[in-house]
Amino acid sequence: MATKEIILNKIQILITNHFGSPEEAFSFFDKNSNGKLTKKEIVKLLKQAKISGFIRGIVANRLIDGYDKDGDGLIDWEEFKFAIDDISDKSR
Image 1 (cartoon, one colour):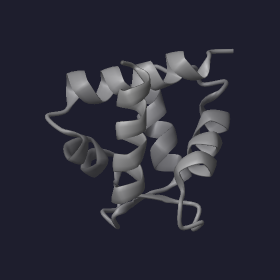
Image 2 (cartoon, rainbow, N blue to C red; image 1 turned 120 degrees about the vertical axis):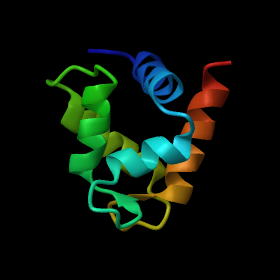
Image 3 (tube, rainbow, N blue to C red; image 1 turned 60 degrees about the vertical axis):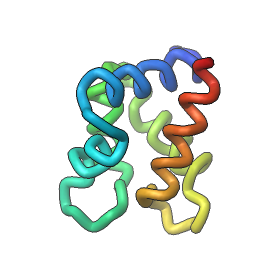
């Protein structure tokens, strides 16, 4: 199974290489434009980041568990921004 660092690095690479900003990435994956990412939308982000299909659901759940500060089971913009900042800090 991929390590946490590898997964976080792949997410950072996706956002850095394919989007002009984290805001652009968030908007792209927020398909219903409700300002929150569902597990399904996060799984699509992970697929774009080339995370193995076998573990995408597990990783999505862990990302939600780790960054969903308001406990609604979704990732809003502030939570997403915190996650991206956290990923960037860990890759330095």
